[in-house]
Image (tube, rainbow, N blue to C red; front, side, top):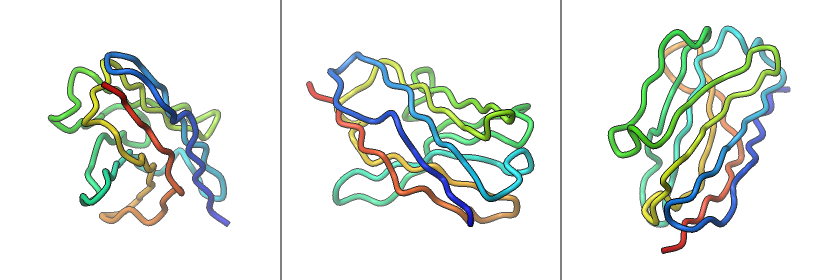
Length: 117
């Protein structure tokens, strides 16, 4: 059974930082591209960042470039999202996802991030 479990969300003031983690089990983690998405109330789910299987390449959405960074530890089957200089508009539920082909096949349940002004 594949499981993706996010943690690290919470309430933070604008300008603060949070580090999200996503622990993965039930698949060969080191062969999957991992990503973070987010969904704000009343909005569609948006891409935030992704990292390929060996961490040689990452991609980050323009809206968070220079503030967020994605990383992974294949020895711990975990992907991270370091979020700095948080803004109120970063408030959303953050999801991690895994894919080997074109589509993200596996998703976590999400963790809430709330940034107060």
